[in-house]
Image 1 (cartoon, protein in one colour):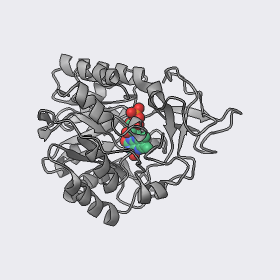
Image 2: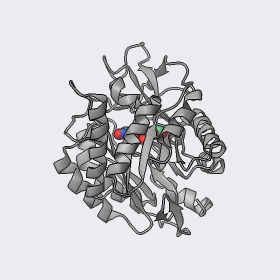
Image 3: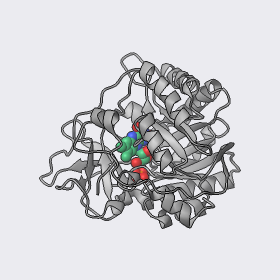
Length: 356
Ligand SMILES: Cc1cc2nc3c(=O)[nH]c(=O)nc-3n(C[C@H](O)[C@H](O)[C@H](O)COP(=O)(O)O)c2cc1C
């Protein structure tokens, strides 16, 4: 099976040449219109920040019937990608317990036996084009959308020597304005990248700071919804504090990002190389833990009567995976890695559940 993202080639190659697709373009079933955060959509099935590297990727997956499309995380400055490998498959079919940080094994061959049951890990370091490049490309992505599709742009502040908490909060606010100006209908802050320095990757565990970032973004977003991408909460007691702190500022939270884990080769050496020992696990192996976090969040929203919506991500590749999230009350369901091997998943989901 040919993947749309070629893991043997660099991020830049995939950015310039992808997505790779040799299959046919199937008809996308017509589905009744729904609401997503005040916007009209054909379905609440989408792709979170990750696979959609630029406007060409957004256009392709829009053609394939995904309706909520997220432009991969961008910064206010250029940032190069980590060296290869950037994406490896994990040789286990159990659930990756987030309470244990050691260790997931890398698959020796390049592709998993069952593509739609795959567990993988990525380590890119949140590369970004400079604003002069990504802003016009976001405008292009917006133009490529069909009726009933929406564009989210994911952003992150860049920690650097001399930056303070306030300068980071301000930077998230500025990025919200830039994303909106470029054409985003929704702006998302990535508070949870599992593969970068702690100060960029674990913001979501700090409820007060997450609240400040949401407020700064809301102020600059000029009325468009603000989303926050959260990581997995190993300690579920923290979820309530975070949701309370961001409620009324963010419209929704997107849960969850890859679950951080040490990823090794069969001989125990670091799969992504020295300095990149920890990386985010994605796919089937995180589904049970993602669902558990999403359900806890939805219970809190109900109990505390929060206005916040929950967008669910984590290990969705089968109809029953998405059903678990929708039945729990998720506002939308996103597929991060599975559409790399099967871009027709939205079509399959729409055929069986036009109400999604
Ligand atoms: C190639 C790739 C790159 C990713 N990059 C980002 C990113 O830049 N920002 C972000 O918030 N999440 C990123 N993610 C994480 C996804 O949004 C999602 O949380 C994760 O893949 C879990 O979903 P899945 O189990 O359906 O793959 C990336 C995922 C993939 C597959």
